[in-house]
Amino acid sequence: MKRNFINYHKLTALLLAGGLLVSCSDDPEPNPTPDPDPDPVEARWITVAAARMGDNPGDGNGGTLIYSLNSDEAKDPTVSIAPFDNGFIVPSNRTARLQSSEDGNTIFNISYAGDTGGNYTKYSVEGGQTFTQEGTSVSIAPYVGSAPRWIKLFDGDQTGAAVYVDTEHQFDDNGTPDDASDDTYIRTEATMGVVTLDLVNSTIVEFQESSIQLTEEEESNGYYVSRIDMPTLNAAGDKLYIGARLSKVDPATGESDGDGEILGSKTIVLDYPSLLNPTVISSTVGYGNTNGYRSINAFEYNGSVYQANQGDPNGSHILKIGANNQYDDSYVFSLDNALGTDDAYILAWRPAANGKAVVAYRDASSETGVAGAQGFFALVDLEARTAQKITDIPYEADFYLFQYQGFAVHGNDIYLTQAPVGKNGNIYVVDTETGNVTKGAELVNVEGSHFIGVF
Image (cartoon, rainbow, N blue to C red; front, side, top):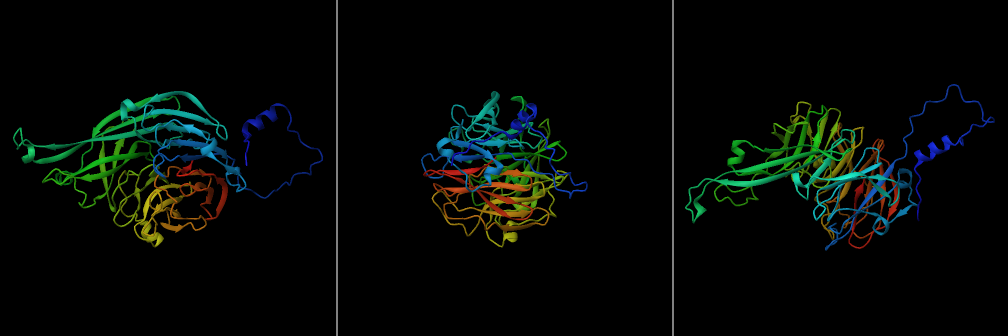
């Protein structure tokens, strides 16, 4: 079904200006004591993101297309959209890294890899495949490379932040010039770069490089920060948290050591907006990485920042960083325990303003599909530390969520996409307050491709 979408705000303004909205004298007198009703939630744009297959099913390397529909239409199962056939092609050599404004009216993109890699552009959402570029583009490639890892900070759609890390193993000079095999490993230098971007005016705000220091014991044992991602602003707006992945070398050989102990989850803390004075904080509750993958991995809620970890030998946790910019180790939220499962791995997640969130995850029960491990969704409560698998959404082996990027939040509702690789699916809407799930618009797929979220 083809749908034509109307900008309802513009239509209302035109009707008012033309004097076409009139009152009727025959209307009954209003009730002087009407029952109080909650403020209605205005409709907003919901933008669906689709990743086309490159060489292999589910790799998403054939480019990204987007298509928008009104939130009321997104909830309507009689609506059918086909972004792969008539969506807007987002400039990016591989899967685009997308963000949206909080009201859904703007899409932000930084191209990933290729000739346009690192180019920032923003688009006005106008319905269907119509996305109109606003302002000029700016390249952040000179600062963080052509395949940047970036995120939009939650500061009223004002600022984005992108990061990178370069590493270099350091040795002393015990060996001969012709044979360095006797050189002794000292540590690995990890140099972090952070750039902030004015999303409104498309200009660079600040750029800083820093050395990331672990403890002397950790570094002497071969640990170093090998990847960083997902900058998050704290509630006070004076610190930036950056998720981190650790790697390890064998100090005796300088060779990669994948069998070492998994250390407590770590986050890099920087002064903001100066991006100076980096420190590293560690959790004693969760272990493994905090950098996430394609989706935002940490969110501010009620004065604290809640962060997912990945690769935890005890299953993913949601960790808490308090207002003192340290991990709150009294907060223990194990997804394994909450769901009654094993090896839970949080792939992507997003809370609503009420502290209840939808989590995309895989676990020990996941089947291996055409592109990788099968994914599921759960509804979690950050305050109660509870989680429940959402059973009203269909699952099958080819439902692949590893590359999932975005959820759209509209009041207490969270919008998501469900479609196995190469198969049709639907938008689903989760009322986080009641747990009710609404099956919405049909998503028409093509061979080998998949949907990576809504914005």
